[in-house]
Every structure is written in structure tokens, then in C-alpha cells.
Image (tube, rainbow, N blue to C red):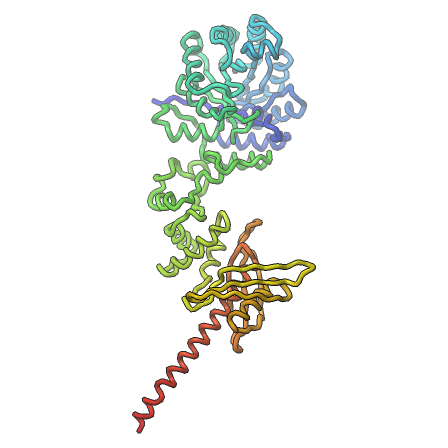
Amino acid sequence: MADRVMIFDTTLRDGEQSPGCSMNVEEKLRMARQLERLEVDVMEAGFPVASQGDFEAVKRIAGTVERVTVAALCRAVAQDIDRGWEAIRDAKHPRIHVFIATSDIHLVHKLKRTRAEVLHDTITAVAHARSLCRDVEFSCEDASRTDIAYLCEVIEAALGAGATVINLPDTVGYAVPEEYGAMFREVRARVPALGKAVLSAHCHNDLGLAVANTLAAVANGVRQVECTVNGIGERAGNAALEEIAVAIRTRRERLGVFCAVNTEEIYRSSRLLSTLTGMAVQRNKAVVGANAFAHEAGIHQDGILKSAITYEIMTPQSVGIKHSTLVLGKHSGRHALKQRYAELGYALTKEELDRAYAEFTHLADQKKEIVDEELIALLDVGVEANAEDYHLLGLHVSTGTSIRPTATIELQKGGRKFVDSATGDGPVDAACKAIERITGMSGELTEYSLKAVSSGVDAVGEAFVRVVFDGIQYNGRAVSTDVIAGSVKAYLEAMNRAVRSRRRKDERENAVHAAAPAEEVRSS
């Protein structure tokens, strides 16, 4: 049967120490309520002796949270422990968390104390904490760089003084999984009394190995893992709660453990923390990043449409995200485009899909992602296009406050190319006049409008024109990230419709004239 791994969340303490991530009392309380919905086992609410604000936040959280153990961090100093207990004493499930550095690096350069003095401080502090609270966690700061024999000596002393949880942190993210796991194997073998306590791991991400080290610790008997939402924390951050919880859930059979986190609250927790701290999650962040369930490559999209399991090892719904996203960009294929049009209510024929896909790939080369409004606009582009139409090959515009706008247009019709230039009242007017010079088609622009069909600095603009040729109104519409090019394409579309109309009229008149002699013969 699988063993339970308890989730110790330190977002409100270690996570808040991340530069720029500090929260006020109300914000910490709001996050604490969400952590309770997330169903973590322990939340470290803060470092009460650090400031009056931190003390008040821990006290408010302790008086509010009901189902989760509330821990207060304290140095191995009586003043810290007393202040910490004062903050959490009203909690339904309080825990005092005492820590002291144990590596020679910290003893020599930071604490300026001997091993014997640290051992004495450990016993004194843990005993004092235990006299106040039944649940006492003790952490050997920088355990991963501590001499193993001395580490075991300190652990035995802490257990003897009443510690119920022993935490061995990789404080500076120095360990690699094999050696971090080996450390836990070694201390368990050397300290039999650990069998009566909970063994905990706390990993930092300086080498990007925090989650891997945490899972290595779990594989070697650790049953409490300390982590933060979005992996925030000192320097490069802590092990990410969402990654650990989902890894345990997804690979439960392999790891042989489970945790009680309500994974469907993961995304909500991530978003709330980002809102409160202003620290956005990177797009490619595992589990909660914007790209975690997004697929752009055509091969991947095709697989997802056939069966999600092909490219998703867990469902987006399992972490609180509504659905996967097929990102329509330059790597997308026809299958994904057709599927998205169907979702938008458009059942396209093969010819319509081919035309839309051609316009889509052209637009996708100009911007990273294409949204629904732009897809709809693409359906109206070039509907009646044929080989006899004029096609825009090139556009060059010179304009400014001190020069007369000039446009040079290059068009293609069939196998022929045409180039001409013109000036105008503005760059669009100049371009339209250049088109008139090439085609000999003079029109009157009666309506012209531009609107954005998406947001952002790379938004696609939709140009609409109504032009009168030969006394008849023709509409043109085009979309482009370049509003001038879009305007020119819209004008050209209207003109092409006029050309086609004129051509059809000429063909009908010619047909009538050709049929006239035969009619005259029959009538005689």
C-alpha cells in the first residue's frame, strides 16, 4: 500500500522572502485560505520575530485556519520561540519550527560557534519549544553540506529533546538527487530513533534540481516535503508544490506514495499568488505555465485531437485548468485549423479550408499567435480570387510631416507584373492612386474603416472599404498586422470585384452579339 507524503507549504514564509514577493497581512490571510482549500497538510505562516507585521499575519492565520497545521519559524533562541508560540498558540493545530545551521561552513563563517555549542543550543531550544507545543519540527540548516557523523549526532540530540519532525534541507540547492537521497538513507541507518519521527526534505532550486532532489528524498523514506506555490523563494526559489503534487499523482505506481493535495485547486492557487505578489509565472513553467497544456506543432495538435493521452500525461482539468489549448501559429496544421473553425461554428468545405489555410499561414508568419476573431476575419478574404485578379506583390510607402506621401505598388496579374508610383493626401490615398495608374480602374472611395480584431501591439487590423466603380458599389475587406498594407489589399479586393463584374458583363454582351446572326437565320 502506498505511503502518504505530507505537504508542508512555506509559501507564506520562505516564498515571501523571494525579492519582490512580500505580502501584507490581508494578502497573506487570503493566500492562507486558498492553501487550506488546496488541502496542504502544514502551512508555515511566517517568521513571527522578524517584524510586527509578520507576527500579526501569523496570529491572524492561526486564528482563521481550521484544517491545516500552522507552523511558525524560529531560530534556536528562546526569544524567537516565545514569540512564535505567542503567534500560533490559538491555532487548532500549532507547530513550532526551530532551526539552526549545522554545516562547518555556516558554523565558522556565520554563527562563529563550535559544534559542541550548536549541539547544546539544539537541545535547549527544542526542549523549550516542546514545553510549549506538542508538535515541534527541527531543521538542520545546510544539512546537505554537513558532516554526516555530526549531522546524525545533532538529529539524535533533537529527537531526545522532543522533536517530532526532523527536516534536512538542501538550503543552498547544492545537492544532486543521488547524494541527497543517500544522505537520508545514511541518517535512517545510523539513527534508529528516526523511525518514531517524521523525516522531512526542504530543497532550493539553485541548480534547477529542487523537485528532483525532493523526489529522491521521498524515495529514501522522507514523508514530509517542504515546498512553495509556483516554486517562489530565496534566490532561484524552492521546490514547486504543484510539480511535486502532480508528479506524485501521475507517477503514483512508480513512487509508491500519495499526497492529499486537492490538485484541482493548483491553478487557482498559482494565479492568486501571482496576483498578490505581481510575480508572473513563466509561460513554459511545468503544470501552471500558460504553455503547460498548449500545443502548436501540427503533429502534436493532430495527436491531441485524436487522443489527448498522446501528448498530455495528465489532464488540464486535474489541476484546475478548463481545457487544453491548440495554439494556432505557423507550426499548426490544417486539422487543427479545421477543428477550431468547427468549434467556432463554421463547417468549411475543402476549398474554403484550403483558402483559409493559405491566408492563415501567411498571417502566422507575421505574428506569433492567431486568435478567434482573426480566424473569422480570414474567411472573408479573397473569396472570389482567381488567376485574372490583380495580386499585391510589393508595397513601399514614404510619408511624414514634411514630405508628400508617395507609394510604389507592384502588382501581378497572371504571369505579368506591373509597377507604378503615385502621390496622395496620405499613404493609403497614394497607394490607391498607384493601383489606378496600373489598372486603369478609377474608383470613388465612399467608405473606409479600420478596426482591431485582437489586442496587443501586434494586433491584426481589419480594413473595410466601399468603392464605386462604373456607378456600382463594391466592398473590400482585408486583415493584416500592417494597417496600410491591409487598406491597400481591401481596396484591391474591391477593385478586383469590379474588374470581374466588368468582365462578366463584357462576356454576356459578346455572347449576345455572337448569337444574333443565328437567330436572324432561324427567323427568316
